[in-house]
Length: 96
Picture (cartoon, helix red, strand yellow):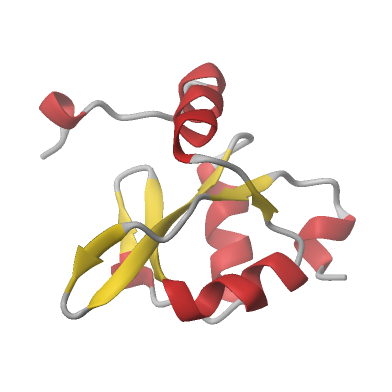
């Protein structure tokens, strides 16, 4: 069990369905805070450059490791619902 998971943090990851750079990608979010998301990502050696405003883009091959560390697998719609409910969601039109 990872330290982040032991602290009761909820980190969510969806299905890797987004193609880019010859791979499939998923999204990793926290429904609690960006601080917790960054802590979980750092503990899993995800590069900070993978962070995109309110989520990390993670390659499909990272999912088993993220799940083993305590991330909760959810569908894409559930991930967005929970991100919106947390107040952390940044709409596409508000990016950059």
